[in-house]
Length: 456
Image (cartoon, rainbow, N blue to C red; front, side, top):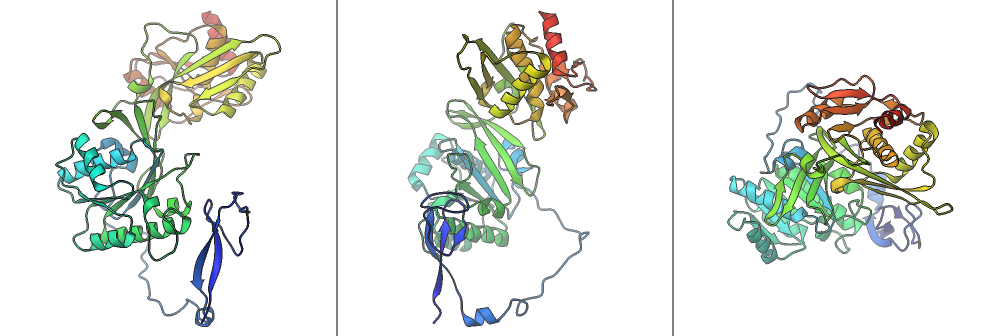
């Protein structure tokens, strides 16, 4: 009788090794290797190949006529936007986020709205008892929604229950790290258990046509916990972001096989659950009577949606010999260091003896490269103590040479700014105005400094 081969799998990165080691050679994690049993190697399996004995597959040309599936509306326009237009039947969606950010609340509200619209919905909770989910539904005003609810952690029990009747339109698994497959040994949450449980659920979704939503835990770095192969298995990956101290929540799509990536949906946490925010710029703009130094508005582009945010900069001169500090909230700190070096080398502004603080108002994290000019304008405004007009915004990418490079979708950014009452913009040369909004071209950081000095 053949003996099962043993392997040691890293619980951090999923790499397999033939022997145990204190440190994983691939990711460097300590004491992360756990023993698992691999498939049994038999002489029959070693002698025979997989080139025969299977069924012949039907292969279609690329121009074959295929009927597109009808998307399912979740009841949340912002959630549908992040999904690319709604749920696709038979798809698998993974939603991750920090603890307490509102993942379960969002999915329970979506399940309640879909159930009230006449669609069958099943909700399986592996972290909370059924009574706890009912209490949350009562608080959200969804106690009468016909959602089928169960508390379970066994994948076999879940699939047996779903196969007993007609497949529902949507199935929610909260969360995948609590699911357990009896085909493998190991505790729930391990690499092998997460992979096996996800594979069984996704295979059932493809065969039955039901949309499956998996809730995933995240690590301290903000990445979804478990093997990275889980993100490759699903059709869409959404991250639910936000600070617990702020009211807003952002649902960001980082992978979508049925739509565009980098789309966002914006929600606001209220006493009766999550509410959609149709105008996100109203959350991130500060309304004041007069302009203040160091505050500049930037039209960020999140997917296809422009969102206006306010950048706030502060510089404090220190005594000679003191070590200056750099603090950034909502932006890349290394990018700020590069921008400070460009301003000092190309425009003659010295920040070596000053502390620099930069904040994105509202708590939004900006990754758009077009924010460089707005950050530079905020820094120059703070150093010169000259305010930028409150009806003016800025956008453009700054190169190491100090020149301002053009950015994509300038007309879309300006059109959103004109709707909110802005009348002027600092932008790269060649950018055309929109409607009543005029554009002041800025070719370099030296030109930006000269323009603000002229205002002083």
